[in-house]
Every structure is written in C-alpha cells, then in structure tokens.
Image (cartoon, rainbow over all chains, first blue to last red; front, side):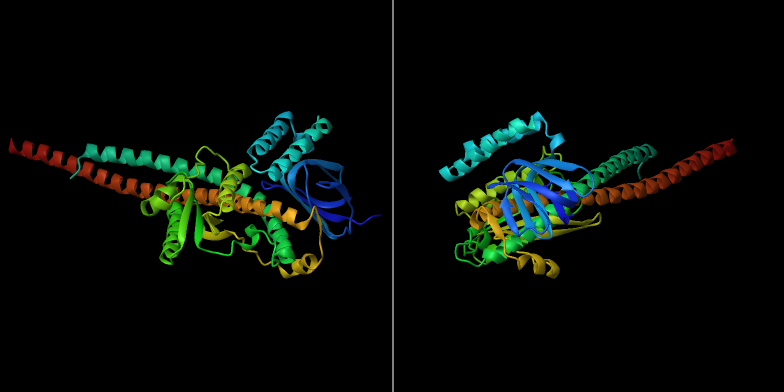
Length: 133
Length: 295
C-alpha cells in the first residue's frame, strides 16, 4: 500500500480541500503530473485545467482550477489556485466568465511576451471546454 | 424650561434614533459574521503564499537577477501609500485611526525629503487625507457598490499599483489597513508590500522545506515573475478582508454604545418629563384649591 500525503487546495477566497490523499493529478504548465507520496520537491505553475485528488477516504474529487501554483514537497502538496471550484459547480456561465476575463487580458496586453502568454492561457481554457461540457 | 410637549417630542426623536442605531448594530453584527468568515477562509491561502515566498526568496532573493518586485528598485525616494478605509462612516474610530496612521507616515516621509503619493481605497479615508495632501492624492478607488469584497477587487487595485511600479512611479509601497483582532479591538497597521517583507517562517517548517532544493517548472524566474504580482494581490486582498471585518466590528461596538447612550438619555428625559408633569398637576390643584378657598 502506497503512502499517503497531505493535500491542500486553496483559492484566495477559501480552503477547498484539505486531507490525506493517495494520488493527485495536477495540470502543470509543462504538462499534467501525477503526484504520489514522497515526490521530489517541485514548484510548478498551473495552466487552467482539472485537479483531481484520490483521497484516502471517499471518492476521487475533481476541481477546476485557473492559474496559480502547486507546491510539491515529499510530505505534502499544496495547490494555490487563483480561481477554483469543484468541477460539478462549474457552470457554463462561470466558464464563460473566465473566458471573457482571459480574452480581456489578451486585449489589454501591452507587449508581445504578455500577449503570447495571455493568448496561450486563453487557448488552454478553450481546449478545456470540450472536456468540461 | 422646556415645555411638556417639547419633552415629549424630544423623547420620541431619541427613541427613533435608538431604533436606528439598534438596527445598524444588528446589521453590522450579521455582516461581521460574514466578513469574519471570509477573512478566515482567506487565511490559509495567504499563509501558504508567505511560506512559498519565503522559500523562493531564500533560494534566489540575493542573486543579481532578482526581479525588482522582490528586491526593490534600490531607492526609497518615492513612496506610495495605499490607504484602505471604509466607504461609510458611523463606525467609531475605524476610519480616523487608519487615516491618522497614514497621515503621520506621510508627514514623516515628506519631512524627510521623500516624495509621497497616496492611493486611497475607500471614500472616508480619502476625505480626511484630501484636506492635507490634496496635491499628492491619486484618484480614489471606489468600492461602494461592492457588497462583499472579492479577489477581483484586490486584483484591480493590484493592476493599478503594478502598472505604476512598472512605470517607475514609486520605489516603496506601503499598505494601510486595520487588522481585525476582536469586535472591540482593531489595530491600524502599516504593511510594506513592495518590496515585500519576507516573513520569518517557523523553525520547524524551515527545516523541512527551505533546506530542500526545489525543482521549478517552468524555471524559477518565470514562476517568480508570476508569483510576485500575485503575492501583492493576495496581500491587498487580505487587507481588504481584514478591513471589512474591522469596519463591521467597529460599527457594531460604536452602535452598541450609541444605543446605550440613547437609552440613558431616554431614561433621563422621561424622568424630567414625569417630574414636570407632576409639578404641573400639583400647580393646577393648588390653583383650584386656593380658588375654592377664596370663595
């Protein structure tokens, strides 16, 4: 039996999930990563996507996250998400709102580097649309 | 001496005022509960953020290429004071104590030959500071239509602050707000947000996390570039939430006082009223009796 580790998912507004997990999947900017206990310390930025956590007790829980970081240490994982909701609570409206914000960010970007990163953020969000709905 | 009618009117008006203050107190109590909850649920995020910041700062904070947001511009000639107060009054010393702290700081800096800019968030503080610092005030950030402060509000303010920072308009930014301790105690606080004060992480945590070497994905610089503005936003968000809770707490105790004072006043007025009514009755009786005797 694999070890368990401490998993926390926090957004600025609230603590969404905290507890012992067996495995957590995180949408990093460089690709999805599955994290088990005793993972080497990694700090990764997040792209918009789904974080799923297989908790010790209960079923697998899935959350929508947009932007933020994951702080991975051997003893635990903390996901600091700029915006996060349980997947089941993500409605069309919420998602469209996020997309609108992303689009505005693209329009507001002043230099090319920012425009590219805002655009890729928007693309990732659009890609996600099909998995969500 | 006030007539009976005057007294009666007076009592009625004080009673009406008492009703209002009582209602305001109850509304504040209800809002306080919510604001406190919001402040509490935001706490884990900012705590984790502090820990992560401390980690990264120790990793690359001293190196040459550290971003300006972390290490500062090197100067401290121009200061930006972000003063967060309430949009509404009638909350005791809440607004004035924050503005006083900001005012003292601004005076001190100006006396030291520094340049100061003030970004007021909330109308009440702006009104007070405008009297003295009208020429260095930036447009007030209005949160009047905001019922419950969300992260978006903090983000908007952050964007404004960061745009100014990028344009080199200030070197050091300090945030003024009232930290919520309890209903009767809110502590006006000044917190430097740019460059950030790196909080000392507790011993136990430092031993386990800071000593470990992190892998960064993408690289450190990129993460840091993303993290630093977010940290500013989180600090501002936290300040706004603390402020919201403090404001309601201050209002609740102020209104509690007002209700009690109104009660005392009513008692006193009622006593005077009764005494005067009695005196009048006695007077009338004497008149009747002496009239009867004269017959």
